[in-house]
Length: 203
Ligand SMILES: N[C@@H](CCC(=O)N[C@@H](CS)C(=O)NCC(=O)O)C(=O)O
Image 1 (cartoon, rainbow, N blue to C red):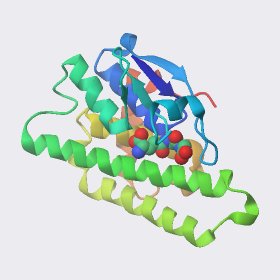
Image 2: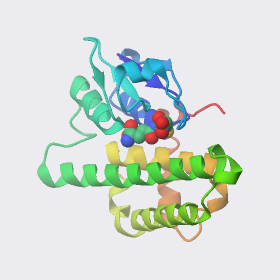
Image 3: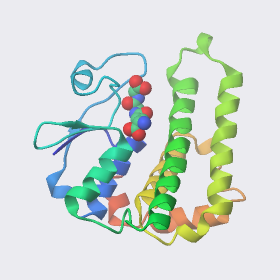
């Protein structure tokens, strides 16, 4: 399988970390690709009309996206039942935590585009403030309502830790650890896993 993307993207990194947690990383080859918000990457567009990374090209030549579907596909191929348990309650808790982490990731990437990629004269401060408020609301939700799930290694906790890593890298000034001890302790512990160590992006 070929995973098109770059580990600097939190969505790509969460797929690769999932492959490591599922024990099939040797079967997933990372193919370097980048996608900018203002340019079409023709090679990626040939695989997906959305043209965002990650895209997984299966051994049968099918393109699978987006990151959530790729993570589920990796579990399926590996026969892994712990990263996304079948049992109804646990299944939907994991998927909701994954959705929360991915919503946080979308906001963090949007803030990066707004404050770094967008030319200065075209920036929209009110939008950046709205996105920051969304980031803080997601972080508070994780801190206050999800800490009992932090001991589990699931698609949800993988995604949370990867996105926190992205926020550390791109938005350190947000100081997300302030007044969020549960989340900070979770991330510091999770960062020691080989799935996180071996997917650390090179800036
Ligand atoms: N919902 C997508 C989001 C992926 C995403 O936002 N990827 C970014 C890189 S972090 C991208 O390709 N951006 C290029 C663009 O916006 O055109 C997923 O979960 O895979």
